[in-house]
Amino acid sequence: LKGLLYVSGDYYIRNVATGKYLAYGEAEFIMDPNTGEIYETHIATLGEHGLNFQLTNVGGDMYIIDSKIYSNHDADSEKHYLSTNNLSAPAINWQLTTLSNGYYTLSIPEYGSGLLSETSDNNLIISPSEANDPYAQWQFLTHAQMVESLAQADRSNPVDATFLIQGAD
Image (tube, rainbow, N blue to C red; front, top):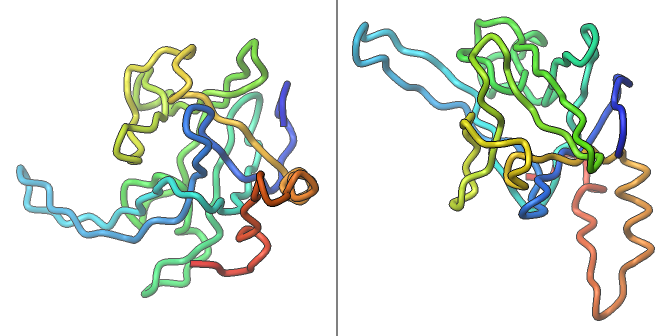
């Protein structure tokens, strides 16, 4: 989807530089070395196969990005958002900024001015990237657009259809 995105709905989120998609990572335990407090974090990763994220507009250019995937040990429907700092935290509001090329940057204003970016080893970071950096640019694709891309498939141009498999891991 290019242009203004103010419509709540389901989208596959693809990095412009690499063509990789936001995908589901695992919950991980980390310990704050200063306090000894243990946090559980959801880790989003990048992969060849996209995950269908639900975007909910919460006003203007602010969205909640919901993976719709629960952790293995807690099926609380309020605890499966992209980039919460622990499983008990509320959803984070992401700012989607439309660029002149029709792509988007993703940022969390309450955490500063960094942009969600991909690193060379396929990790996600909030970094001081510039909006013109393709590693910090994102494309939002609907399910229908993903299906349409299958029409371009042939022997010399294979197209991945894994997104059609529900619950693919």
